[in-house]
Length: 396
Image: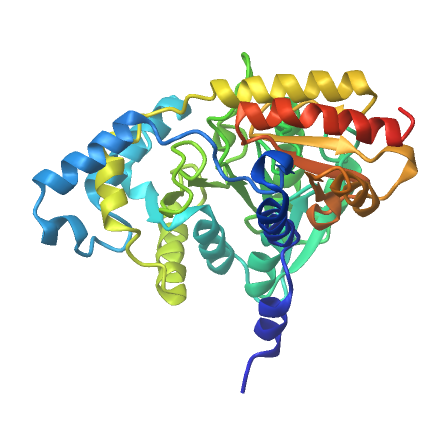
């Protein structure tokens, strides 16, 4: 018999994908230059030259069987060592290679971690706004999702609500910094307050509570902003990472889970991660990408284009009267719906000017729209007159 939960999930449409499909339709009808599609977070800068050249060299010089064959389930040791070396630089101390489990991107990392750490009927807390698939990953592990609202437009968590969620007995908390959809970064002060709450709860409840730090946008930060190394703030932290955004490889599906030594019973936690990967069928991340990673784990993205798009849009939209959350990272801009409109109403009005935005409802908050500015600079500039007309329609 078909599993009803999976049937419902398969038939439910992703808001982001639905809008992106509408964008494809409109482009075929009126031309790409007349559609301002900010719906999907697909990197708009090419993969770094070192990645491209490394892949070419590997394909030319390496034996096919070695290059495309199975690796060990946690990943090829050369790639794990390369990743661990980079994490060690961030940590300020050595992260051993056996702390690294290579995966098919951050989505599989999160699925694995939820299955490894959360039992049927337990609770998982997320900080809104949040990537919608967190709900899917947590609920598939049998967990109940508790949503912690933001305290204000800076998108830092409402601490009283966070403390209340933790006191309900959560098994894990998922954070995402820099954040999709807002671009906000959790400050070190915020993380330290959260860590204090979690440590008190661990002592009172007599068990480990895990902080799962989802960090696919970690290298996409602007100015002198830095992303804290979360395990140095809270011991029971697992890091999930993807190279989809940092190396512009979203279709190649390569990432990792890090279980640092500071995690209580880290060896057993890592073994549970391995077991969950096995149970879910996520064994052996793409081999070619692992071989590339062994040589390119230290490569950083060129975010010049994203930075320019961010500044252009934030400055222009703010001057038009829109209230925006200025992002410190990622490639998203969160725009407040004007005139008391709901997020969906705002996005529908924007659609009338061929501006495609994603309503914030699916991200766990109301009254905003997400704009993904990982598009060409030409598209950003061309969209400004349409945004001006939208502002005028609201009387801004």
